[in-house]
Image (tube, rainbow, N blue to C red):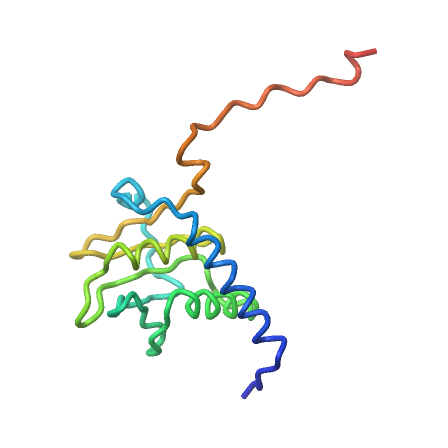
Length: 150
């Protein structure tokens, strides 16, 4: 079993601050952020259950969003599969928008695809930065060739 050092706690604190700063500038989730997945994977690397008080059941352990992100970061550091995550309804709790928002933030920062199963339908959660949602993408002007300048 691994022992935890002070540096691990400092790293967890840094992650918590990063999540808190992202939460401060979040624009909220809407139906446009959840789209019917065209290419649903046959299997998912991680399956979560939505629990009460905006917590997640991850491998039998109840975790809040910060702890869940730390668990996912550990999976990535250990080179465990972490490209697709499915969130399902818990035994006593429906998937709420708070669950979707939290998972979308984590998926966006850690660059994996997140899916949610609701009433037997699997949909992909698509997170965007606040700037990307407010403005349409601007075309990039072509670069000038140095040979043409001389």
